Length: 283
Ligand SMILES: Nc1ncnc2c1ncn2[C@@H]1O[C@H](COP(=O)(O)OP(=O)(O)OP(=O)(O)O)[C@@H](O)[C@H]1O
Ligand SMILES: O=P(O)(O)OC[C@H]1O[C@H](OP(=O)(O)OP(=O)(O)O)[C@H](O)[C@@H]1O
Ligand SMILES: [Mg+2]
Image 1 (cartoon, helix red, strand yellow):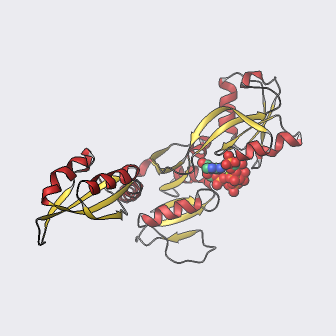
Image 2 (image 1 turned 90 degrees about the vertical axis):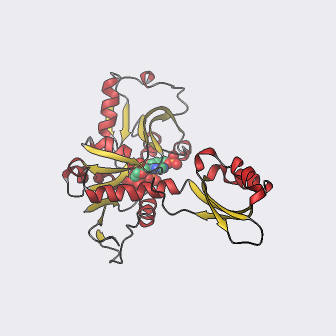
Image 3 (image 1 turned 30 degrees about the vertical axis):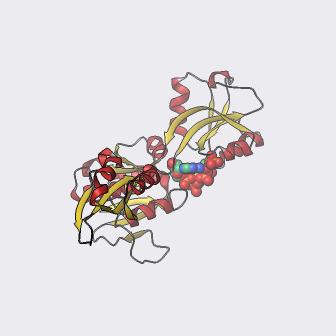
């Protein structure tokens, strides 16, 4: 089974980290190799450009892939987006020079030249809004085009907005919200190995939002400590061999509420409180 992954760019490192954490790290191979076996027998990673991943997965050359939602939409392919991976968060925007005082697409005149890598998404936007613009296909560095006089506006990816600001541009419309997605060839959606990969990646993503809290609680404080734990947590409680009646309490907590819960259980009598990372959380 092959998973197509970005060979370079913004998504590469986080994708490889996620796959490693999910048990699909690569075994050593020549750094120039573009197809590398993972530690899980029978699953290989295929290193290709992020924009090519959607059609490579649709063709079945790779059964799964990880790339940006923007490239999935731009490719117009029939694949299943089975997971939003939570990184590569960005948006596809229409941006214009900020000294024109333009706020809406309709304010741009007929014949406006729009530079973009995302030709299909841009064509759809222009047709839906009945705009008579000219699309100029580029392969990157869109933000420099208006300043060069090579275009009047751009449709490009933005996340912090830094590159737009640096080049005197401002976003006036959002065409698409994007993030990294796990995509699957439609014929393989119910394949066992696909289910395995999806389950393990999901397990890593869920675990990243949680921490395991372990503590010792004297019997006399147990009721109060349990009362301050988040209701959905379902703690595990076990008797501790100790000179005084003592219980061990173990519970998975959302990282966002961890510090408050620690202070509450501590003031309720818990001690020897441990915070432990969770590698995977499979519901
Ligand atoms: N600035 C960004 N912040 C967050 N995510 C981004 C950003 N730029 C791109 N992405 C996301 O990463 C995916 C891949 O973009 P990336 O820029 O790595 O590839 P590329 O543009 O095809 O290659 P290159 O940038 O080397 O020309 C995009 O589909 C998008 O979802
Ligand atoms: O909103 P920002 O945080 O400034 O990020 C936006 C920039 O990120 C991407 O460029 P990338 O670094 O991928 O290079 P590229 O232009 O070659 O795609 C995108 O093409 C924008 O230029
Ligand atoms: Mg890029």
